[in-house]
Image (tube, rainbow, N blue to C red; front, side, top):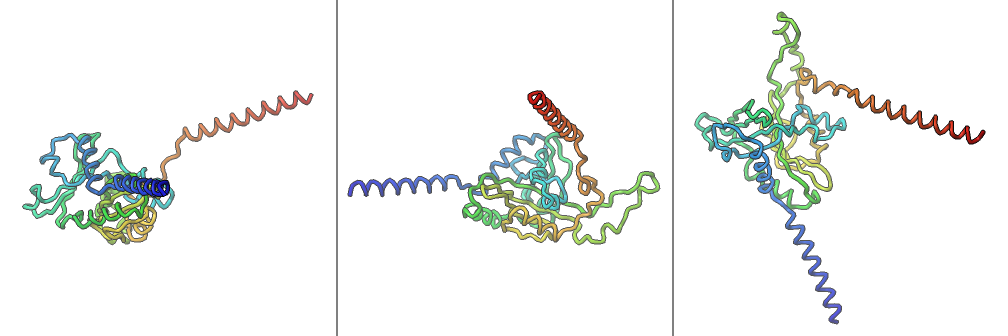
Length: 280
């Protein structure tokens, strides 16, 4: 009887220990926000007009306007996360409410040590307590498996600009207006919680501007999100050569492949000669 009781007690303690360890590994959005802030503040060192502590959120920049198309073509998401650029969101409490703006987004380039752009918004910031509560529910539910990392990403695409077409001065003022025939939104802007777990990659969106077909506060598998965005968005990509043309093939890859093939042929020839000599 004592042995059975000891065995049961051991099993209970073992189960409790596993449960406690799993609970300790669960982290809320507050933890991941603090991680992002610590990383950003370690890289951002500039003469902001306001205190860095007044920046509400920090996010890595998604560098490709049509990243969702390229994901569906088999490219990895990490290719489109710009590690050398931070998007910072400053809320109205930092002094911008008096100008009629609820919040603004600043783009900071650590490698240049300067800001290059800022966008002011006259609508309330949708990154609110409700959105983060929904994110925490997803992170703590266990439905996505073991969470490895959560990072915050900023995305925007601009259909409103009309870059010039042509090389000489007479053509510099002309552009093909037909490219804008399918434009329904001038500007897209969103914030994503990018979740990596042992079961896959997920996006938890917060759409700031523009109809992308995705819902705030809902978790999407990465490629599911890309498919929905691809079906609902139109970006005037014809002006961006890097968006419509694949990267130029790397000559070194072809050279390396040629050397490998040539080496293989040489090895085969040597083996064949040795075999012939043995036969003789």
